[in-house]
Length: 303
Ligand code: NAP
Image (cartoon, rainbow, N blue to C red; front, side, top):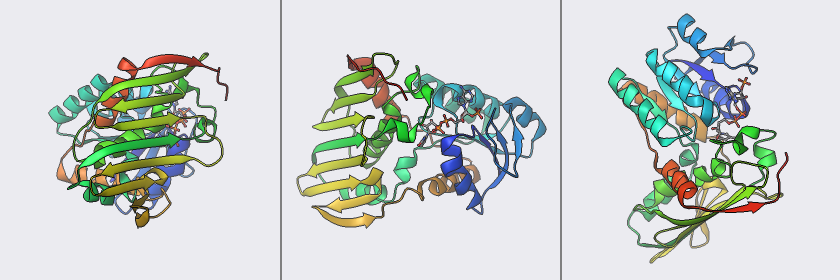
């Protein structure tokens, strides 16, 4: 299938381009980006022009930041193309629901990807927890924003989500592996005095579930989820790639390189089956935290 990749920036070049190149399902037919391009691939700077000139491209994959994504997704669906959305799937919940409706009416596939759910140990963790009674869980997601989002001011602008940009990855895993739903009860959000989105957040959910997100961690990075059950303890480490049960490694490997190939394989399945996959559960928790969270002001942040 021919795919157009839109928004040639960090994640497009780090993960999407290699995942497409390594798949027999996909042919990177063209890109759309104002500045970025992929060598040897036809490059457009305007999505409307691409849609008009490349009717043979049946799928559009959007690796833009969340705020400009809706307009591009709407244009692609309206032009009869299947659409794959980077996480988080939009800047608001309602805009993603609109896209879902447009896709449904047009008989097109819409896929809200959650790359962390494709981490190697997530499916084994879900299987292990399926028949357990969960008594508590703790997410610790602490990373260095300067390393993962160098100079990307959009993460601190409205709609950029701040520390929830990585934190939503943890929430995508949590909502996938827990045997039942949880809901947010309270939150503390730390906003740098010169920014519009939080740089750290501490969330309390029902069921003794806590999350600690921080974007100021230098040195070793932490992407851990610990789940206590009445029959043992599960630890997901390295962003869902390594699983330990009662302190012993049981599944996974410390690499994220399988996540994006798995997303593109899933998109190929969805298009062939004429289906969509739209899950807003991780983003609902973020919206709830922004609604209910207590705002604290902290030191100004500069890249
Ligand atoms: P990025 O490099 O800042 O943005 C991707 C590209 O989108 C930019 O290079 C830019 O290309 C285009 N763009 C940026 N702002 C735009 C705007 N207002 N209007 C139109 N185009 C715009 O960001 P990224 O890190 O790749 O992240 C993109 C998405 O991937 C985000 O939703 C993020 O959560 C997700 N993601 C990121 C990472 C990561 O490690 N960074 C990991 C997984 C997922 P042009 O200037 O060429 O148009």
